[in-house]
Length: 468
Ligand code: NAD
Ligand code: UGA
Image (cartoon, rainbow, N blue to C red):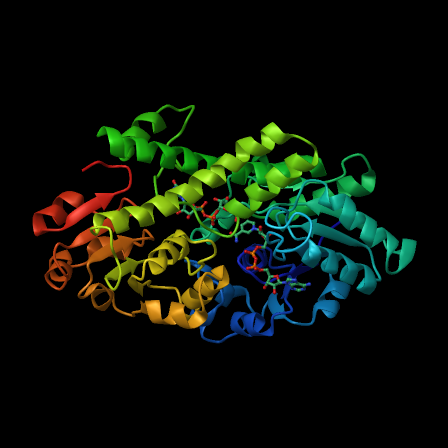
């Protein structure tokens, strides 16, 4: 079966970039990305490519090439579903905030709504692809909804799992050159095999065959949660060692290099930090913990939960270190934050460590001044308000946002590096020092600055995982 028409429900960080790359690489396929969020769709259609709702290096060029030719962004969800022979579900699957599993389980209401909408609208056979990250065995729920609602047995559905492994900030290169593409399907029936082959041939247009992996649906669903759990575990492991390094005059960067050269361990994902953020690591591990508990696997659940507990500790101890170093009080003191995004090269702030560090410091009545090259002012206030720690007005009063890093740092008692943006390394640190209160403290939560040079200027420096 040759795919001619793809619909993707959800025009977010995954749906937008993934579909843009599919459209660019498969000019014979018409790709329509739909969303109920009108503002988001309007931004995807904006003539001014700097206004795309997702910032990713290289994405604007790809959108410019494909948009209007075979890539379309629309709010006409029913129409796009009806026309498609393959439908990707790429909607959000946040942690539940209510009811059973609150704070742990993935909230699948948006997924179910999509399944019901597809069942209602479809009048021809469809391949439905789970692109969102889902608990293992979700495909059976989707199949049950598709088969038992809507237009009855005349329409046949095949469900595939095709989790996305892109990381934000490198989404385009991850999509163009993935380590692997994972496709889970029903390989026990001809129709199932045909569906798997159809999706394999879409990716086969640019991904080498040996990197396209096919498995059963459950392995595919669970592999996504497992991959994120392993990645986050590495960060928590090196962060745990960073605290021990600070007590023992070991240096976490040296330790990371030493262990990373062991090919069994590998060098990637060993950068100690103020804590991992992003929309997925925490949510997916909490979900994994919840699933394990549901099956009564309490030791499995506890094992993975520790990754989150360590991460919470890392964020908190960074904030408390600032407070204790500043003579046990930050009340009324200006603390400059360089960076608010959860990592460099993205405007995404979901679960960013900066939010939690700011929250701790605001509790101590600090005056926070933030500069981030990509995050919008309103987003920072929304992030803080979401925590519900204090009234919105208090967040507005306690945090100011600057468009210029030198302004943010002027008259500050301390600077905290919360995101590893490259530009921070190139600042005129002498100029920043001259305009600060003394002693001038720097807390490098990302290990990106050259401490020796900064100390020569006069800064008092702290870096995660270093006792210097
Ligand atoms: P997102 O919040 O950026 O985008 C989801 C979009 O779906 C939103 O624009 C929302 O309006 C839309 N939506 C929700 N319900 C809808 C409906 N019924 N009809 C039409 N549109 C609807 O989310 P995201 O970051 O793109 O993540 C999507 C999924 O991909 C999640 O399951 C996530 O875990 C997974 N994932 C994310 C990343 C990442 O880097 N962000 C990477 C891999 C996997
Ligand atoms: C992560 C995974 O890397 C992707 O494979 C996955 O598809 C995605 O989650 C998802 O499912 O959403 P992402 O969260 O975009 O991607 O970014 P990462 O590069 O993994 O970074 C996550 C967090 O860990 C960031 O806050 C980053 O600063 C931190 N990190 C990462 C470290 O502190 N140290 C490291 O060595 C690596």
